[in-house]
Image (cartoon, rainbow, N blue to C red; front, side, top):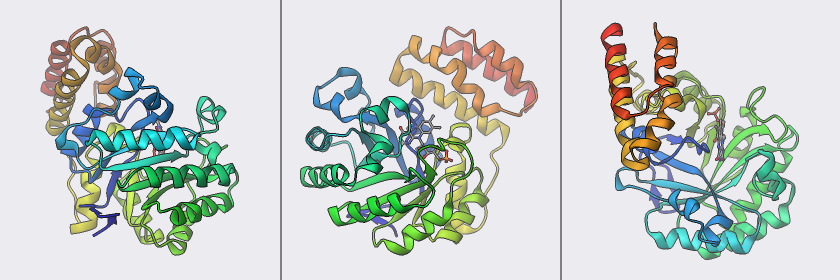
Length: 322
Ligand SMILES: Cc1cc2nc3c(=O)[nH]c(=O)nc-3n(C[C@H](O)[C@H](O)[C@H](O)COP(=O)(O)O)c2cc1C
């Protein structure tokens, strides 16, 4: 069984950190679907350092989503270390992750995210400071770097392992690539051969067979799924079933509708009725992409003001499809 420090990971699947998506309600849904480890949206270390209310809200957790990995971003060793210590003291987080992969301009401009992959000295200082500040299992998530060679990925991975990082997730696209082209899984394989700490492979897993192929090719210890989980939270449990038992089931349409209703419940619980309804207008349509009648459903959903209206629309859609 894979371990991150002393934490036993009961499965092979990680939900990737997705800003604006992997909020508490969505993480709980994915966990209920059978994912082994869920990750938060990225959280600003400076925001925690200055005790920003909006930032600290992002650290809200529930027992039923555990183990939870919280991802921090930043570029300054002191504030990163203090944020890590703060997060540990909250007592709800199981893993601290640091973002070395975000390629959004706003983040790079601060010297954070994938910008760190060009700065091995700063990266080392951050990793050492965070390691000193927390006893929690500690991971990082990197890209391939600023070119396709993987040179920077291996440099940062070596620094991380030496600094006491307990596992590493790799999304092998370059900083410049964003989400275009393909992830180069060869780099995951090379990292796995090079490192002694567990390696989590990420990038372009869209179905169960992709995950199985990544594990077979790279020998990675676990897989991390991002975009595909947004519309198919079942994918993570299907991967778990496939890698442990060799089979998996497709969810019935009725189960998909049930999960949509569950997401509404979880959103209302966390965001409150008004805010939840507004957020769900776009969010719920992802689950029914491709089903007959989904564009009319999307148009009607865009006008909802309450969660009850969303449920009525789902029920009507369900009666047509099931
Ligand atoms: C909407 C969105 C938000 C993301 N936010 C984060 C983030 O906060 N932290 C991070 O490390 N990666 C973030 N990523 C990258 C994903 O975690 C993941 O590495 C990437 O999507 C590749 O995996 P996939 O092919 O399974 O989607 C984000 C990606 C998307 C599409």
